[in-house]
Length: 106
Image 1 (tube, one colour):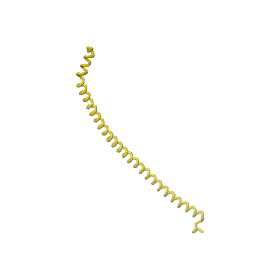
Image 2 (cartoon, rainbow, N blue to C red):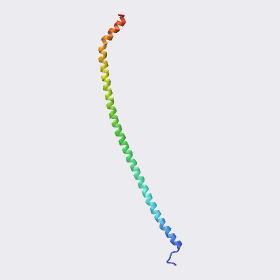
Image 3 (spheres, one colour):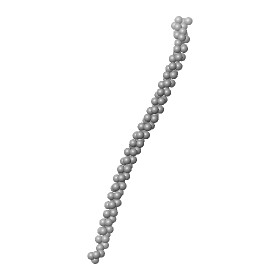
Image 4 (cartoon, helix red, strand yellow):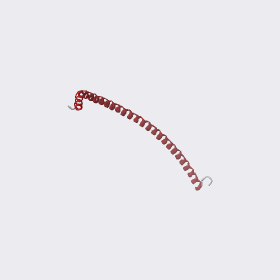
């Protein structure tokens, strides 16, 4: 009976084997979780960088459009001012005459 293991010893051996397997699986799982965390952090950093780059591109694109619109508005305002100046200069003699007639009651 010395060479044969008792049922209790066989159970203990099996428990020990399973305990080693559980420890190995636990270590493997922890390593996988750590790797996944590292990968997730890397992805977040990459996404953050990509987001900032995209936002900067959008900003400069829209800023360029805005500057073009501002320049167009300035040119339109200048044309309107010139038109108003010409119209005013053309109407100045007639306006002065009407004012003189009104004041002198002609």
